[in-house]
Image (cartoon, rainbow, N blue to C red):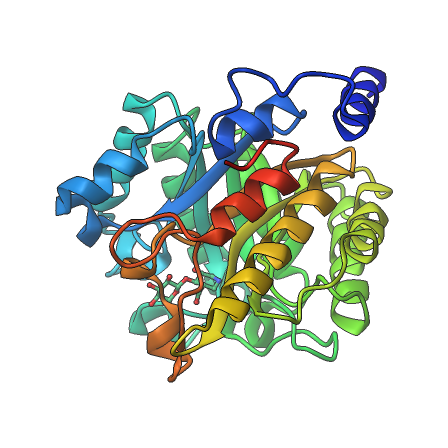
Length: 344
Ligand code: 9MR
């Protein structure tokens, strides 16, 4: 901590030369004390050779998140028949580059196969199904997942539990149960609760704090909370406010990470919006850097070529630091500066 503080202070005061090695986002992130800067990716993109060349660039990316192929519909499409080929492809690519892997995700209301959502379950039978899923998937990847998103998006905006088959059949105890099943299968993976719109504080963030406490009170292991950080440009909280929210979580003894950052812009993106986006990304990075226990920063893919945003927010896009032609946008330099690096 002291070492980190003195480095950050010295960098801010300009009394240290910019680390010669900090040419990229991951290099800047690790130089200032984070574990990694990373990106999500997905299998269809892995045939795009220029895309993969940059994905492999460990100066920028020291960590990869598996964007879709470890979700329930991908890994257990029919009951107790598991399919790991696509997830394995992403994990192997990351391992080939010595990149950390964030595995995503075990229990989520979305991307569930029909056999789960329309099953006629009792508390006992669905608990057994969840235990089997978590045990098989986590065991398959044992030792290879730096982080696991164990439970994803379990909350509504008002802080109540989001309705899903697990809540309605098992009750809120499905959350601590999921964590205990994951911990049993891979004691070394860092186990996370992951959600969006926690970054402003308020009811949803308070409920997420309650989830951490509930898992801890149940005697199960929870190591971290992921702040997805899906934003619209100009709505990102300032770094001091976000740092305060992040700290309210680390005060409970868990780490935090920015896990899915993107900042969408109404199209066509103006120069002004791109500059604001750079500032916004910088503020997010600065908040993480300023909180002991904020371990890393991940963007939800790195290029506008493969962003989920235009498909879900019609008229919006341009949400990532590289454009559709894989060219760095101002957001790249914004991130680099937020990470204490030097933009060109
Ligand atoms: O990027 C993912 C996209 O390809 C899928 O269609 C979508 C389905 O819901 O999920 C996207 O990833 C989500 C992530 O798993 C959880 N947080 C929100 C992400 C963006 O929707």
